[in-house]
Length: 279
Ligand code: C2E
Ligand code: CA
Ligand code: CA
Ligand code: CA
Image (tube, rainbow, N blue to C red; front, side, top):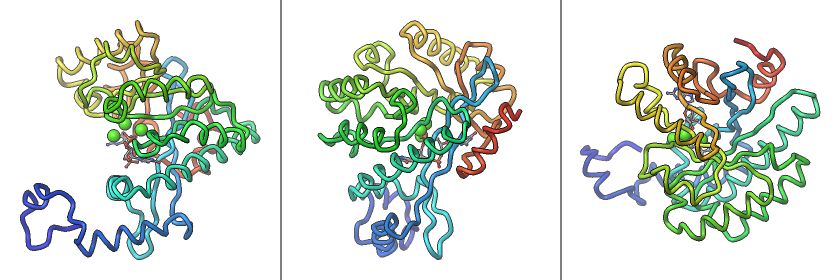
């Protein structure tokens, strides 16, 4: 929403304005997005750096808002989180991603992993683990194929509760990834407490890795420590061959980014899988 009468800094200081008519309109339109079939998922391939093959895909939500085109998640996810709408939307995303994955597997398209982003509002619900279990069962997808992408802020608020939830998800067989690694207060030492499988190096590090020696050193140390903790490392936002080369030289396991493919509709990902490796 545009700031009314001007000063953006002022608006940010007050926080989101609940009475902003544009925001209210967005909120109420979002409220009906699922039942009106306006949400869809795009999928971005995750490429194994050793083989060059697609080993996974991250599902990313899109909203086709009538009269407004496709609204990017940065515009509507924060609002959905504030209103709680993210809970049914997240459930829809998980269900849809799993059903699509089932379809790919049935068509013998080799996709080892499907990654789905989870927000704090979903993760903190007491029935979250059971819901994931039920959805996996309904979609007939092996839990080992599902990776849930979490952020550290949702783990840190109640670390003990988070450890319990993560342990229950691990017991199901689901894989757990820590998204946006390096942007919060994470130190790899606290990661020992959480039963994670993957860390995703934030795109801000990837952006500078080929031009800034200290960024490269941080990524290097991150990958070494992650590997010593038995975690896989996925780099996100890889756009250039130079970035890819720096990551590969440091032993990064997987990468995703525009260099390989932007997030694409399900049919397009299926085409990429059929021609794997397409690059
Ligand atoms: P994220 O999970 O960190 O997702 C990565 C974002 O980077 C995606 O933005 C993706 O399109 C973008 N990206 C991928 N490759 C490149 C690249 O090479 N260069 C650049 N500049 N960007 C790249 P997107 O799809 O706009 O999603 C933004 C954020 O919205 C996501 O960040 C995630 O936090 C959230 N989000 C998206 N879908 C969902 C969802 O289903 N549930 C929840 N809870 N959050 C979601
Ligand atoms: Ca993510
Ligand atoms: Ca991320
Ligand atoms: Ca992000």
